[in-house]
Image (cartoon, rainbow, N blue to C red; front, side):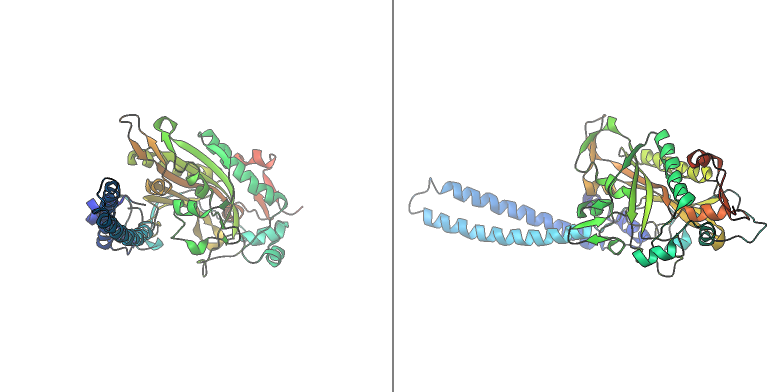
Length: 425
């Protein structure tokens, strides 16, 4: 959510930012609606004060004056009621629009319409060449007996997965490696529920923008979370922190759920796009300073690059353009690992600076040391690791001719020292 006063004072800047993000909200109409709401608040307040004045004057009025005063007070009361109804209706319209107002993009963000205009910043690692016919991840799993994809689909439906034996341990090992890395950088490792009330979804920005991606359980009036960010973003909602408490660093671990309603036509084979997955999320709450939050943005990106380097996966870093970055984002990088069977890079991490956009929605603030002024915090998020998606490039890049999979050195301590798993026995 943007500050409505900033919108009123900087309409041309806001219009330009909205255009870059493909937002169709009419800024002039929004401002006029805000001014109308303020006008109704002022007139309602004036009517309330006049009614109170008349009510207070009844006691001291003569018997001849009282009927006239009472009648006038009643008429003003009716007028006040009508005014309040108008105010409630206009305020609801304003609130509905404000929930849909996107963050303004960074001046550094490349301007573009969709993901075809994202900018490749760098490529890291050598794309593997094989002296044998490489298999895709599903074939590797089948060869080693590591999955129950067909059977689990009969039980749970499409886009679900069940993995077993060494691959199941590998999934957990990767998360432990990432959690240890984040803990080493001062992040508080925290496990969070996957169930949320509605309000946090508005706070995070899932609602009203991505309603079709969210699982809802109407009988309980709760939603299934698509990322620990959702929960962590509202964990301190409505609080006023001290500046000395900042930054707050969370490494959130949780099962996650997404409907993938818009994934038709995209690759959905095997482990690529599933409805339920495990995710370790990096989440940062810092002071309201773009230079500070951009410093953390680079730090989060660095950590995720280290994760992919520890897993010895070739990858590329993208700066996401304005038309692809989503409503909450001020600036965004994506990391994509090389997937040999698809001959392309696929996203493994998404790293975003949200500035104060989420904090305004959750009312999370802090009191600064310099002036004692209460300010909204900045929030940032980045994938630590998400599985099973990350297993796709892992299995395919590290596969061997005999069907085994090589375990990178940094991961071996989490795999009981094994250098390889699977393969012909």
